[in-house]
Length: 125
Image (tube, rainbow, N blue to C red; front, side, top):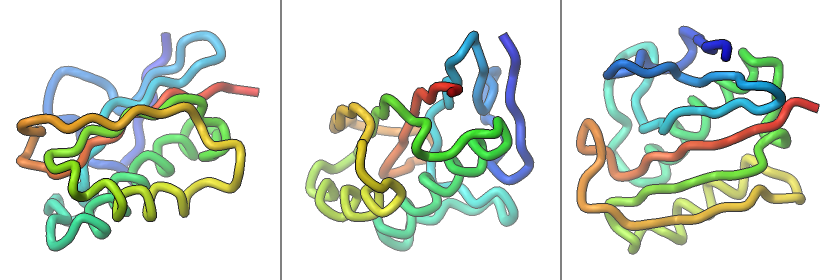
């Protein structure tokens, strides 16, 4: 196992890695809408928050030498399922066909009072 770290993504808030590579897989820990530069949560609206989440994921994957197209599985956690359509719009803009498998679930609370958290699994080709 190899830990993956980038300063272009927020520091972990606990004892975990931003991502780890194990064999031909990269497992990206759940990302919230925290800006890595300012440290502030992007909670002004769900689209801005989702965009920051997806940007954080993209930055981690790029550090691992991968692209968004390497993602094979995504899990989206929402604090409010009413945000589903707006999150889908942002999420979909990061992919071009061959979308990864995915589930989306509503949860009662997320770290840092985030409205969205996303984790992904990617493959190394």
